[in-house]
Length: 396
Ligand code: FEO
Image (cartoon, rainbow, N blue to C red):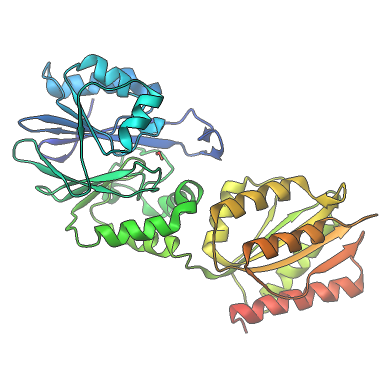
């Protein structure tokens, strides 16, 4: 097989998953996902993270192809989540004298997930490990994406092995480094990965970025998606922006509608926004589009306009599920506008108001609620709602 190298003695050992439908059994990955591991072949041999367990056999074969019978001395565990520790048991079985390298939060997870490791090297923030000509240092980045998460910095070659940070959905279809592939594809998939997986931990991501900002970095080698070497600022600037909740001028309109009346309200609002000059408008039917894409766009755009019909005196269930997940992400500083519809009893708008109070987002415009078909008075109310949003967004 092709061997992909970061330097003369550092290898990329990654595998493309095009079979799994849902990452974490939640998030759709129509373009798959890559699990990236790395091997440093110096006086001592170090693996950095492993891969998902479905690739164990090929992973061990790839290691053997490089080492030709020599053992692996260290397995550095930046992150114990099973998509990266899936081959831990197999690696330790193959190399019984291997030393696991992690921090004080790493090994309890390993023990609970797999077994009590025998040879361990517990590192603290900033500790180093020299494995020949290569010196590595370890830097904890808690909650990016789990409590034990750390990154490993190769001081010799100036490579940051960053774990989930700077990762992306999408397989590596031939190209592995950022300069070997079309970045426009990863614009959406990197953002969806960040907002879906790490998005709850934006403040932690900000702290991690601040902590790592003085490192001189030539390559960022994440555990998912492309390796960054020609476009470091491309991915760094996006992480700075996303984790700071910075948004573009635009509106995400999401509706839950059984018979189309709430949908008509959404269309009226969107049309008026467009008349007012807003170009970034995305309308989603919450029953059709997975929340993965909707949440990513709520991170992207400043205004979120939510509409729900009433369902058994409550929110439309799919809207309720979306709002629960939005609340879990803790996203901040969005404009919120609400509308809805009912036939014989309310429940949609009433509960959207509760969501508004819980998020603390600025409620823009007067909520609009119609009974059954959209009639002139509430059509005009939708127009006023859209105008209020456009005013906030600074539209013409
Ligand atoms: Fe890719 Fe948090 O594991």
